[in-house]
Structures are given as structure tokens and as C-alpha cells.
Image 1 (cartoon, rainbow, N blue to C red):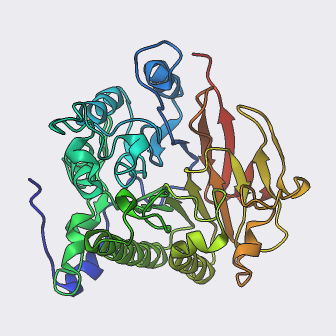
Image 2 (cartoon, rainbow, N blue to C red):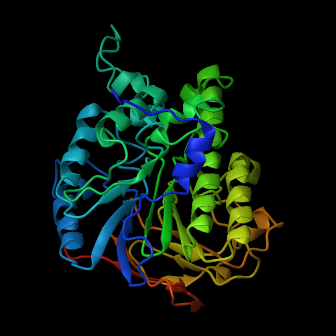
Length: 399
């Protein structure tokens, strides 16, 4: 059981502008590894990502410059069952990360567990319905609780052998006005080398879009409450993060989350309208902050580098599994919603120049991680592998 410290709003404001930091203020180059939507598959054969994960982790550990790893969620595929044993397997694999590991949950490990393809309401013994294949029969809220128990059992600290201290929302929230924010131990922030990093639990899949749990005719009250409480907590955490970055004079902000808020996934645009509140928050905070803001997300699986908050920006896209990138603007939109030529057209009311977004490659072999170097005082022109103080390279290790 987590013991959470509740504080009045005044004290919370002081802490969020405070000093829990990892090398804050340093002007040197910081290198991090970013990946997500992995590992997919069980460990039963030598061709699955899970089987290859120890070697994959070894490739990151072998890079002595990597100071921290960020995983943007989805630790198994949308066709795998949600089980306690698998979650524990991933946790055990991650114990071999030498440096700190920050993880923000994806949809496949909790909010999509209700889906038949992931084992929701599927039983090993259908005549008696006595043994569900999923943890808690696929109940999303129960599976999120399980994720927190396994991966966030030490609030305010990262995973990895050299765990580092971070600020968690579970210990820094307004207990009077927003008491349920205490649940969001997975929402963290930290400062390192003059950069403010923040993660929010924002899943793709079936929570912040129009899908309804267990295929019910209408959304249940538990799902409605979950979305409302988590969305509010996420928005308040973004407020706090940008407030802290401004107060401490940070030169850049990095946001990590799972959902690709611009991915229609073959649906009509209004299917993802629930993400508008987060896009609006990020856009307004980025404009006010003035410095470079970089968003990492997974969810849509193909590497993508773009600025969906300004029209006509350079955009690169992974056109095939493990392939090099192509100019997004040169790919015709098929018109079926599976690809958006310019994501800005979904939200044609932003004009934010100091923002960039990267979708990390995931879900398919070869396994890949993104090597990101951050030099706060550098301001590189926007390109396929650079933006302001950020320079990145796709790494596909031989495993």
C-alpha cells in the first residue's frame, strides 16, 4: 500500500517550483534513450521482442553516454492477454537497466484489457466461466492498479539499478480540491541539465477516444469517472510542470506520453476529439514558455517527426517496417483516415513554432530505440533529426 503525503495547495505550489532535480542547471550534453510499444510477443520463441529484450537492454546499457531511459508505454500488443505474470516478467526484465528508467503506462496494459483480443471477458473454462484469462477479467481500473503495484511501488523514484528521485503527483497535489490526484503515482517530473521532463498517463486505444469498455451500449459510470479524474490530473500536472520550468529558468521542456493524439487510426476525426483538451493545454503552455518543447509518444508505431501545431512544417515518416524516413507531405492521403497528410488540418487553429513531436518506432521488429542528445545552449534549425537543443538518431541494434 502506498503511503501518500497530502498537502495544502499553498505547500504544493512551493514544492512544484522546488528543488527535486537531477543535475538541474547543468549546461552539458545529456543523452537519453527513448522507446515504446515494446516488447510485443511472448518469450516462447526466439523471434519475439520479449525474447530479444535482454539483448536490446544490453545495447542501451552499452552506450555509456545514456543517462536515462524513457519508455512511453504499451508493454505488450493489443492481441496479448493482460496477466499479472506478464507484467511481472517485464518488470523483471527491466531490472537489468543499469541507469534510471522512467515508464509511463500505455493503453494495452490497462485500459484496453477489456477488449476480447486482449482477453477481456474471456475464460479458460467457458461452461463454468470460472477462470478468466485476464487479470480481474480485464477490468481496466483493476489492471491500472496492478501496474502501479508492480512498476510504481516506490513512489518518487525511477526504475533501473541506479534509481533516481523524481517528483510524483501522488505526493504533490491539492488534497482539498483535487484529492483523487493522489492516485497518479505514474505522473512524474524532474529537471536535468536545464531541461524539465514530465510524463502524463494519457493512453491511446479505448479511453481518451470514443471506444467504450467491454463493448457496452453506453459508457459506464466507472469509465466516465476514470476519464474525468485522470484527465483533470494530467492537465493539472502539465500546468505544474510548465510553471516549474518557468520558475526555475529551464531552457526546454520534454513531455512523455503514450497516446498519439493526432492518429485517427482509420476512424473519423471526431473519434479523437477527447484529446483536444490536452493538445490545447500543450499548445498554450508551449507558446507561453517560449523555449523549445519536445513531445515523445508511441501508440501509432511508425517513427514520425513533425510539428502538428503549425501548418506546413517539415515532417518525416517511417514508410515501412525498419525503413528510412520519407517526407510526410509527399505521401497522398488515402482518404480512409489511416494517414493524415498534415495533422495540423485536424486542428487548424494553432500556430506554435517552438514545438516538435516524435513518434517512436514500436510493435514490429527490428527493435529500435531513439538516441536523443540534448545540449541546452544549442539551437539547431528544425530538421529530420534535430530541433533546437535536441538531436536524435534511430538505433536498431544487432540482436
